[in-house]
Length: 359
Image 1 (cartoon, one colour):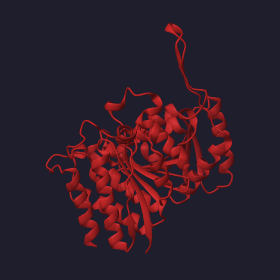
Image 2: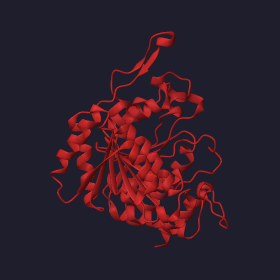
Image 3: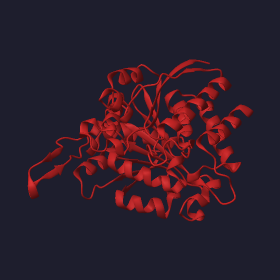
Image 4: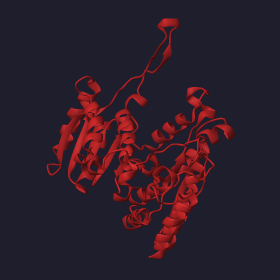
């Protein structure tokens, strides 16, 4: 039993709707296991831009750093697309990740038997898929310099720099091998070493780290082939480790395996405060309509408990409740199936809470 401060940023769009459900589930876990959670709320993204003129206010950053973990909803939307780059909601998100030192983004993609028909892929291809994608989060082309837009007319150009240091690669690779040891002991490192020097350094460094993990099998794959193999034969993968931009793309692709991006949780860890969020974004087209699937947010709460607070039994309880509601035939619109009723955001969360409180 312990006391924990969990900072909460609901953000924009459906972040507001799913965020409150994540908090409700955390509160139920506290009641079940005897923990006390407090949930101070802060602004970031478009909501912060509207209220304070910046996408990441100083008090938000301080409050998050003073907490044990961050439960994050989603940010962004068409309303803020035309603001200056440094004021975009996404700029605040990138700064938050960097300030927290959250260099590793963990994105599990698990295919539930009950949702085999929700994906566009064949059930026999999907059945048994359980992948952990580790995306390096604070380096690479999203942060490299020089970057910018300059020139005039036909000579106007935009440029970004893909850059990695050995220490950045070593720490994410080490985490990948450690996680694989608790799974099926396979790591696939994804790069573009046949074209990019930064990827050659990536591959060489991962090979060096692998020497300390002789019990874990290491393979390498070019990113274009990895994108194809994820769809052709996803069960071949256990842990995938890759750079920032490749991980951004591949982890979103893996959402299609599960049937909906509304099912995918994520954990951003490596610094003193972990950052836990669904990967579905703010989905402004359905915001405020109670159509959003809260299971990705609820799954993110489970990752917070496991990786942020080291509370494994509590994380398992949430994951078991998610499996139970799917087995019960509970569905939101994104994973709807013929003959099964479509639940609202609140109703799906209530179903999860029912299972948590029943045992």
